[in-house]
Amino acid sequence: MEVIMRERSRRCSASCELLIDSWERDTPEPRGQQLIHDYKELEFRRRKRSGTWPRTRSLNAPSPIQQFGPCGRIMKNSAMVMTIQDPASQRLTWYKPPLTVLVIKKVRDSSVLPPFMQLVTWLIEEKRMVVFVEASVLEDPALAKDLRFQGVRDRLQTFRDGTDDLQDRIDFIVCLGGDGTLLYASLLFQQSVPPVMAFHLGSLGFLTPFEFDNFQEQVTNVLEGHAALTLRSRLRCIIMRKGDEGQPAKPPTNLLVLNEVVVDRGPSPYLSNIDLFIDGKHVTSVQGDGLIVSTPTGSTAYAVAAGASMIHPSVPAIMITPICPHSLSFRPIVVPAGVELKISVSPDSRNTSWVSFDGRNRQELFHGDSLRITTSIYPVPSICAADQITDWFDSLAECLHWNVRKKQKHLDELSDLTHSSSNDTLDSLDRDS
Figure 1: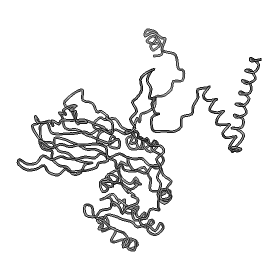
Figure 2 (figure 1 turned 180 degrees about the vertical axis):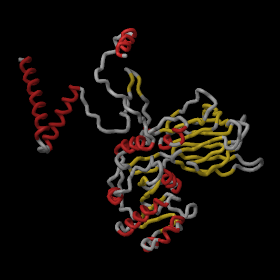
Figure 3 (figure 1 turned 90 degrees about the vertical axis):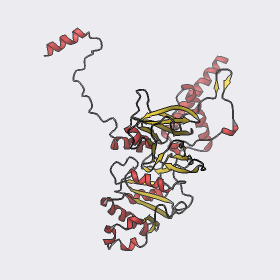
Figure 4 (figure 1 turned 90 degrees about the horizontal axis):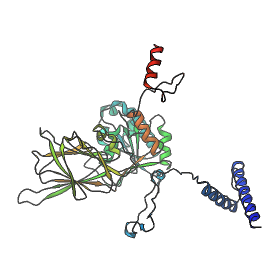
């Protein structure tokens, strides 16, 4: 009797699975909440037995198990518990309609003027938005001569870098040009950055995924909240200055960078000699032309030219890349995003060093000065044209021509050469010739 009951149970389970598979194919919509629950329960059991589980899209790695063997496990620390949102689920939302937009235009490029005028006219007249531009943009003689643009020109709000504070006045940023426009937006906002939409009107365009042809539709989608975001991490940099003899230390300089911090030997003919500390521990001394500390976004800029790997911007990391090191074993390394780096001129160095931040604010590091670098809490929310993965690989293909190679041609008659001896292969070549 027990064997018969087990057989009936097995047939019933198989029939239920067959019924569910048929229902899944033939029924476009679920028929009641109870049926949905039953279906999910049966589907769970079926997949558990078969070992087939669908992998939902995620950019985070799966959570690791916390028990190792019969006795070992990770010690619980309630103070360090945090939830990391999956980058694939990062979507833009507005808790109130955006009203002000900052338009950043590539400078010294007359080809960007027509798209610029077209965009700001549409934003003001169609979208009823308040548009901010840099004051130097309106000083362009070509804009002053355009009589059709005069009415729109008078309605533009202006600002000057270093004088006016835009921190709480801008809801949305649109960049027209190349990657430098996005770097400039990062420079303007040294704390929280509004969402940035970048149109490719420059030379390279690795960070500018949008084409300008159908800008009305794309901007409207963003204003309605239909957009994915890539949170591009930035580096917080603090220069600690040693005071002059008998004088107190100078106040520190704080800067945020989107691409990289570069420490080099400057005009000196000698090798740079830089000490590198990570979380207070001296890890190495750099002897060469210098050192690049970059974000994942900056890994495809100066760092990749110096031999570093390319890192997706959603990966939490810091890239450390030497510049022409006088060592055959000094390779670029990737460290966790949460560490603090300290860079200082070695006491044995024959010269000082120079530091620049995203190619700007270049200044000298003297003996006794130090540069501290860690990941900032203020990323740049870059709006995706498609999604985080597609945009990045499209940029690799279109801008850097990543892995471009002529494909090998197939053979009409593919013979098995793996079991042929070298003499047989040579004989066949002699016969063919």
